[in-house]
Structures are given as structure tokens and as C-alpha cells.
Image 1 (cartoon, helix red, strand yellow):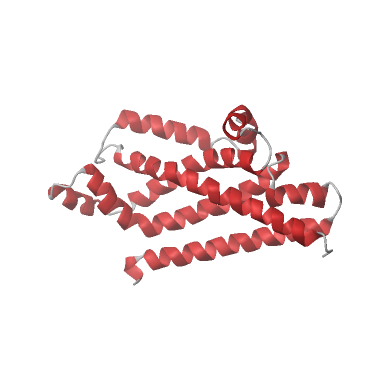
Image 2 (cartoon, rainbow, N blue to C red):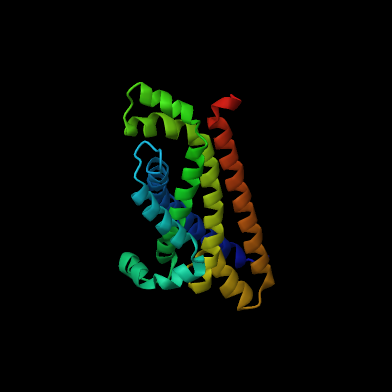
Length: 219
């Protein structure tokens, strides 16, 4: 590897990590409550409202069905409004966040469905409010599964952040395209692939370790 590659690689890695971290935090802040709403407003839920549930489910399914690269292009005016620009690392965070929100919502909903309803019924019998059931039953019981699901979302974000480089999103994807592909430098392309693989492995290891630590059944 030539001497000029390492600084480029480190800069691109920093941009990718920044995109993933910021987007994940923003998407989790909205996606987790969305997942809670999807489970609690379903028929038989503690806040049963089938009409609202159907609307939420339709919106989530609609956004999830749009390929990320198309979503990035389609919301360029919104991205420019929020970030002040449509290119660069900051701009890429907008579509990354929007694409992750419904994904997280569905993953959280799936995790909450695994909570035995008998526990919920027992809490209701003791007079617990819907908010208490969410905060003291659903989320604590499903936390290990939610962490495992969020790990999957982070890994998906790493891949999407690399894809964002195709339209000037910065990060490792941008480095691979501008230097590796357009300037015919295969060593840069290979280096970005290796770094992406290592990053995914690190995220998966950390996520698995945290989920296992939180799983009371394995303690």
C-alpha cells in the first residue's frame, strides 16, 4: 500500500463511522417508539387502535420498499432543506436516517412480540398503565433481542453508507469509487473492502456480546 493511501483511508473511515453513528442515534430515537406503537396499537394491544396501526404499518412498508439508492435521489430537496446541501457526509445522514427508521420500527416490533403475553396480562391485572407496561415489561424483557436487532441495522447502515458514496456521500464508498474505480487503483478498492469487512465484524462482535450480557436467561 502506497504512503498516500493510509491517510485517505483513515479520513474515509472516520466519515463512515460518523455517518453510521449519527444516523443510528437519530433513527433509534424515532424507530424504537415507532416499534412500540406498532405493537401496542395492534388488535389486542394495550393501546389497541387498529386504524392507526394500519396507517403506521402502511407507511413503514412503503418506505422500506424503496431501494436506498432511489430514496437518496428522491429526497434530495428535503436533504438540501435539512442539511443545507445534497452532497457530502452530513447530507448522507438524512437518507440514512430516514431509511433506518422503518427498519428499526419493524425490528423492535418483532422483538416485542417475543415477550410472553402472560407477563403483560399479569401487569394489567395488577393495575399497570400502558406506559408502565411498555417501560417496565415490554422494553426490559425484549432488550437483549432489541440490541441484537439494532446490531443488524448498524451493519445495514455500514453497507448503505458505502452506497451513499456513489452520489458523493463521502466515506469509504466515495473513496472506493473516486480513487479505486475512477483512477484505476485496485489497491484502494481492496483496502476499502477489507476495512468495511473489519468494521462489520467489529460491530457484530460488540452487538452479540452486549446482547448476551443483557440476556438474563444466560446469566
